[in-house]
Length: 303
Image 1 (cartoon, one colour):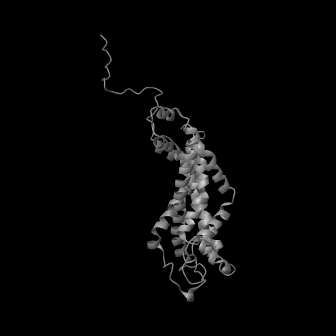
Image 2 (image 1 turned 90 degrees about the vertical axis):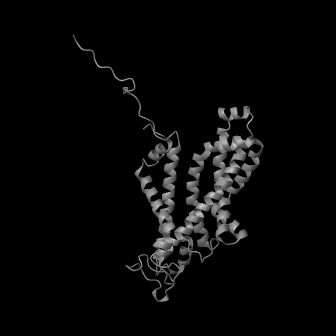
Image 3 (image 1 turned 135 degrees about the vertical axis):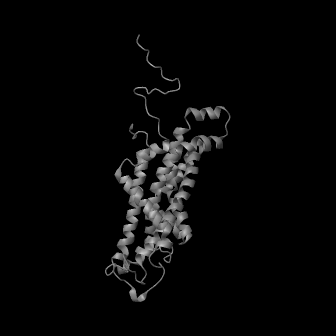
């Protein structure tokens, strides 16, 4: 008599043909989409390296960035001074490291100011209909001027200082964030869950900050990366023109501004800080572009 096949235990999971694997976390999916392109990976690694140099600059700088050596002034790159020395004999590499700290700090503070002001303005314009017209006309007026000219006008009124540069650039880039937040808020406020919250008697601040704002994080984050890059470039331009951070503060822009008259005999004084600015801004732009593609549902591929 043929024996019957053994039965599977009741608690044993049987794999089903065509079953989909367990889904990854949203953060893991975002990282996979972000780092899908090798160029974005390289740019992200460069940003981490620049950030590490900026944070560790006081400890890893080969020389004191402020120490002068008149006898060693305008020395070309060598084994002792990899990036040469400036007109006061100071080590250029050490000053670039310290300048990275200050330039990135300015960019970060500008991002915070512009993001906070622009998000509040965009939420107010996107949710309160009667405020939409007046607030958007203000942003139109600010965006009618080139960024650098508007920043120069604010610096002429405020005076040259680190905090005034942050405030001026924060105001200059606020309309960019406000426009993006307003456009997204106009779409989100018509969603069924917002209408349901309104029907249940939720207050306007609760709807705005608990139901609308969390769904605007993606466009705000993408815009912040671009503003970070713009702020570093504009700060360098203001310092180059002499209306930005005081010349005694070693930012990348100030280093280039102070080296203008020595370009013919010591071109490394401009080339190395300029290369630092280009590398940082380009890396930020590439990462921001990759982040935008990763967060855009229309560009996401099924993986």
